[in-house]
Each structure stands twice: as C-alpha cells, then as structure tokens.
Image (tube, rainbow, N blue to C red):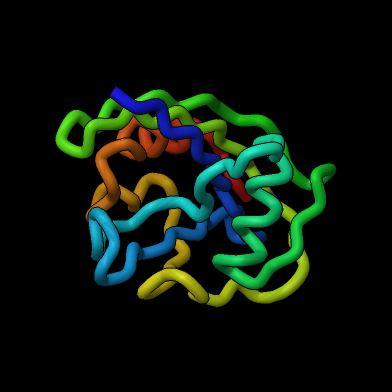
Amino acid sequence: MKILLVVAAIIVNEQGKILLAQRPEGKRLAGKWEFAGGKVEDGETPEQAIIRELHEELSIVVHQDDLENFWFLSHPYPEFDFHLLMPVYICRKWQGNPQPLEHAALQWEYAHEMHKMDMIEADTELVERLKQLQFS
C-alpha cells in the first residue's frame, strides 16, 4: 500500500469555531467535509506545505510562527490503495479572508457540532480529539 504524506490545518477563529472545507465534485470523496491542507511536495517540509496549501486553497497567508503542532494522524484507505500520514497543525492567526478557491464551500463549526457534518473518514478521530479542547 502506498504511503501518502499530506498536511492539514485546524484553523480556529476568535469565536472558537473551526474552518471546514467541502471537497469539490470530480475529486475523491466529493461532497465530504475536511480540514484545509494537502499533499507535501518533494523537497518541502510539512510546515512549508501547509503554508503553501492554505494560500492556494483559501487565499490566506500564514507564517510558520503561527502554526502549532497538534497531532499526527495515520489512517488506511484500502479502497484507494494508500495509507494516509498527516501532520496536523492548529492555526489561530492568518492574513486575509478564507475563500473556497479549490473547494465547493467553506463553513465554520464548533468541534462539538462536527458530528453533524459528512466528514471524510480519516478526520473522525481528529474531530474526537478536537472536542476535548477549548477554543475561544
């Protein structure tokens, strides 16, 4: 099974809500909700990758000092023949207003409300961990 290294950001606003992005039509798992992020390119560190991905996907600027290491997710996707490895960062500071440049939609949600969203399978355990934190 192929190993796929991706990064994700838990973007938290001043009200303690977290930004979710809906996967667009034509992509795997279309219509499901996820955290912003993407693949780590050759030669990139995970921090460089998440900064690039947030700019490409959401049109926001994030600096490395604004990223807080949070968790490292590991999840198999046998139906797609890959195993996902994902460093996850918390981001509470950015420049710009998030725009859905590569997603169908964006939505701000409290962690304890995310169970109502049709989230991608890999994020299920991450959502459970987020419920234990107090964001505000």
